[in-house]
Length: 314
Image (cartoon, rainbow, N blue to C red; front, side):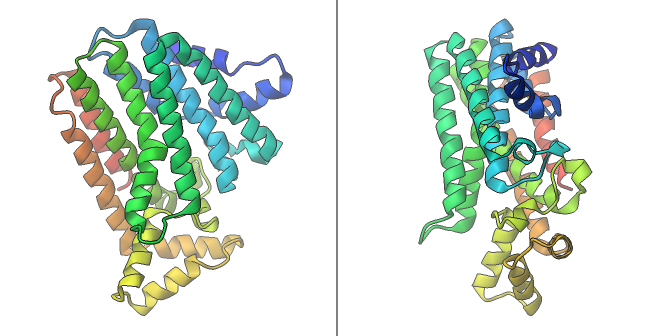
């Protein structure tokens, strides 16, 4: 991981002063580095992958960082990782260009891993874009909104975590069944991770999550608790309090006090517990994908991590 950090610092450095400061902004703010960690961990299922695993870990983290610059513009998020979002500091145009710049740096690095790695990276990048598009336009007529949202999570979050795990196993020479197993694990863990985030956004402080609580509510970005509440009201089985809460969530939440009231009310609703249960279910399904892996510390760590994901939403 120290080597990944060194590569990240090099990959985000620029001769241009503005580009140097802006492209380092989120990287320097920290982060969990979940994706490169998974790459290095699954590489231990093979020969370790040596330098290739470090490069691949850098690639997936750069791709993730780039997507955050774009996401924060689209979501109008004010805070990311406990610091002002890039667009809040330099404006939307610079933030978008910095995201593009980091995508370019990731593409340059992955080219050194061979054509198969380039193809996998491009396919994942396409899924990231499609996930964001489908989140933006919403479900079409006849689509189930909850299923649509789960697919968005799989594309926007699961796909890159799956690639992270896949890169490590693939580049270290693992058998095809092992590569397939960790890829399936990564996608399901990614969905569980995001469902847990939907809960944390309502139940924790901004200092815990690194984001402003209720940002998605304010921007009327769909999250699982709101979708479950909307489904409940549409079923005709909702009570007056459920209907009133949905009306509040659909109203203008630009005022901080109104937003805080909406967050507090939704936090106490049973749809939050239902979302937490979904996160646990996806985590358990992720662990089930690990069956083909040999017993050992890597399998144990992956299983423990999946359990920790669901625990963080408790």
